[in-house]
Amino acid sequence: MPYTLINYPADNKEEKRQAFNTRFSPRTHQYPTQRVLMDCPLATDLGMEQLLATSTGLLKTHRNATKFVAIGRTPLRILQAASLQDEGQGKQFAYAAFSGRFLSLNMRVSPPQPQISAEAPTEAQLNAYRMYLNSIGLHPIYIIQSYTAKSPLVIVEAITSGGGLFSFTTILHNWTIELMGKDAASQLRKCVHLHVLIDDTAPRHPNCMIHPEAVIFGGFPLTQQSVANNVLGYLFESAEVFNDSLGKPYPVKDWAENNAPPPMGVDVSPEADLLSFRIIDYMASYNLIPQLRSASGAAVLTTHHHYMNPPPLPALEEVEDDAQQNCCQWLGNQIARVFKF
Image (cartoon, rainbow, N blue to C red; front, side, top):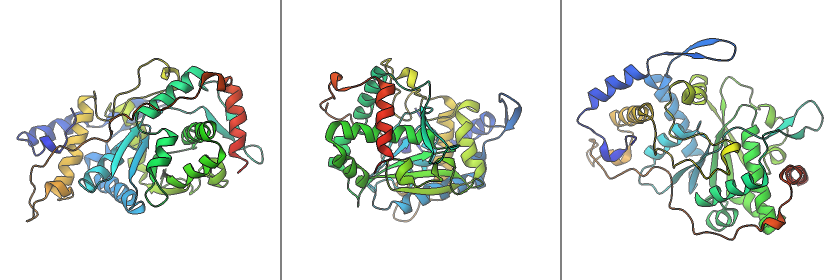
């Protein structure tokens, strides 16, 4: 299991540090067009400072948020650091598996038009993914009942073009309309806030955000945060290069296969374990984890740090099958609504 506060400090810290340095030495990665030597910026103090600057900014931006949910694997280490900084303060940190995208915007026309890829989910896949969202507390009814504008649910995603977040928010938004109508979609937008992580060397507005985000992402309030290029680039690629992710991929083709990924931090690789140790070890050495500090400021062993996933919700009433249309037609019809607020 990944290192958590229940097994840190450990007697073999130095052994773990050496193992981390060995496993996270620079590696050559084969891209389609070139070979690149990649290193792990989190092995350096500067990289850790940049990671913690990001997690600190996330928490400060949403001081009153009740829960943070990472969409896909890229933001997970940022949420892990935030959860350690916020340990014992009552916020929840969760993970919604989501890989790739099936929607994008055609920026060559004005106004930009949504495009559906060949990887768009079938009706069975879409219903299965909705059941998965229900199981992790992201059913629209539950969201509306549990969060408010003052204490929102914050969805965190790292983007380049924004197609993945566009795809995810379209699922959530259109599901809400099907269940409860457009008024409920307005309620949903009041209690969900999007937090977008972008490369600090990229333009302030990536392609998907040149036009008003109220249009692009279903009208949800949106905050952008710049992340150091070396750290965000690593988080995008590290699962492929270092096999160190706390989550599993979940592409559309797997949605109806009854193999939803486990919660964050479950059934992970030794490399993921070591990177978790590295983050906790660094933060503990600077007294940055509240639950590892005694009244005198010295590090102490504390209770188990719960990684990010609440118990499954009670089953909620599902949408009737006969209310569904062919998925591609359904998506085409429903996406149009996003542009008519």
